[in-house]
Image (cartoon, rainbow, N blue to C red):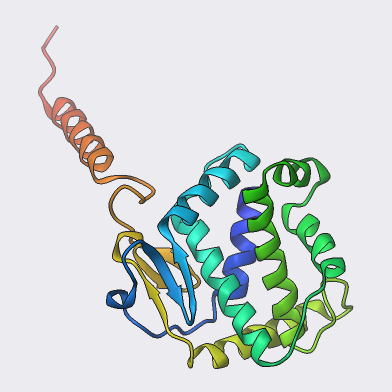
Length: 212
């Protein structure tokens, strides 16, 4: 599994059971999302998406980036409510586990923005495990603890409002889907151009071939 897919899988696995409330109208101007009392700006999402893409050497979209940031904020708030802490000593090995190899970790470490994002993802991973009664990523029953933690986050998240800006799409099943505009995986202009080219190709194929 590539590092990009591993990052996606970690976030999706942790957040897939969340049931989020709120509506897009609740976001503030310039905000990509508001998670409880935490605001995530569009600028931070753009900057982080670029940094992570550079560290991975492959695209990591703004929608995926925002999804991870929303999940991290949720876990952080729920863990704080339950007086659960995650130390630096626990986060560092989790960061390396998320990216999978030392070389990729070193690329993240060289960029403060990418490094901070990876730290957020890893902290959320450890926090979820602890919410499920585990001790961290080295817990012998880590899978069971993670599942229990996901349930704990799902239940607690019912009392936390999450608002996503319409340009990023909707939060569903742990990911942001149906994004539109310049931040989508395929912009409206690019989509229109692609569809026009496909239609032209189809019409060309349907034209009768000259007889030899």
